[in-house]
Image 1: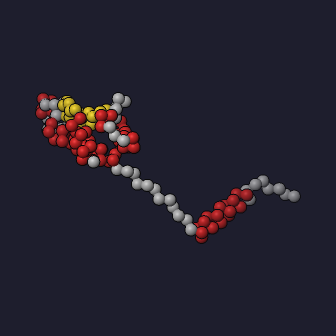
Image 2: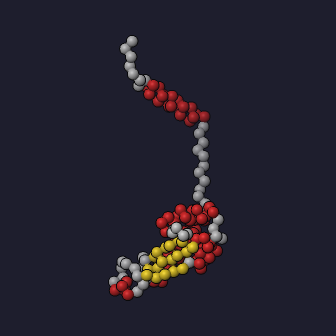
Image 3: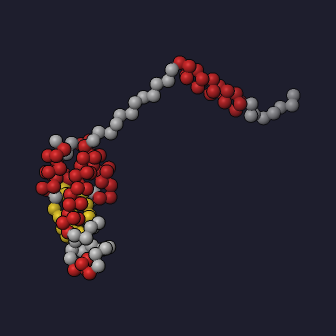
Length: 136
């Protein structure tokens, strides 16, 4: 199911190329090597829990209109940046589909419980002895 979702997302995504900053010398001034990948999340028709996790993971990369924007400008070539953006999109979608691990309740035995109560009683008696002193 994850692979189907990733394929569908990559087919729905639109790419635009823009001039990048950083390494590349003269090449960076002439060629638009940076890639901006945009994906309408609502078009994916995700289930509510997956959508919520994706929105949480995306953070500021998600626009108010529900578009996920991934900018890739790490490499010098357009093709490498394009592959990088698609790979990051796939990783984000895979991570959103993983269910968070359920927290196991801690189990306390009778002895541990008694020690905890004893410690609380001791602490309470210390605090109780901190009142005003009367010299009667």
